[in-house]
Image 1 (spheres, helix red, strand yellow):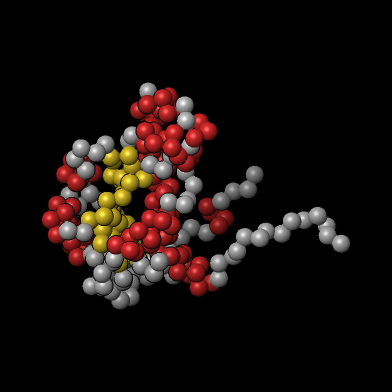
Image 2 (tube, rainbow, N blue to C red):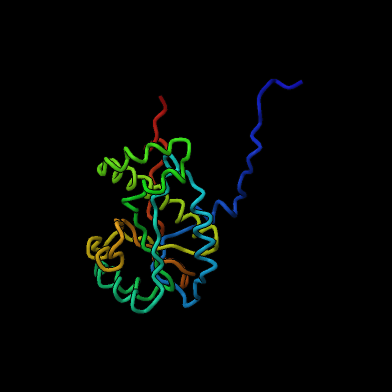
Length: 205
């Protein structure tokens, strides 16, 4: 007889999948010459977009930097230590959030479509929500890259204002992360840095 406890029917990833996404995955700075195709880029987005955001606002915007001209323009806005790796990576994604995400809010959250007007009148709230939720989506993005057999090299060292004025002219976007993507060129140069233990990072109330 059942004790009334419901068992989860959600699948559990096997160890190989968990290793690819978390345990063995590393931030990569040097990539092979293997190209990253448009099909792979779309597959990354199709996975990443499925992660939840507050009220389904989906503020993340991605700029794929593929052409030589766009790459050269991007590199000049990167910090010195990030320039060479960005110039040589097979693909680079610039992650930003759309400051006007509220314009598509009625489409993305029909039950509360009328709230778009209150968001339009409150740019400070829009920026906070856009920034927070785009960072959340960036986590999904990095896991999507790994899930499709590629590696990611996220970077925060760049001139965001200069980058947006150059690559996002006419678009009300705020860049917060640049991510190199590709197949790693060999093994990591350094051991993985330590992670905090469970007891140090969590509390139970």
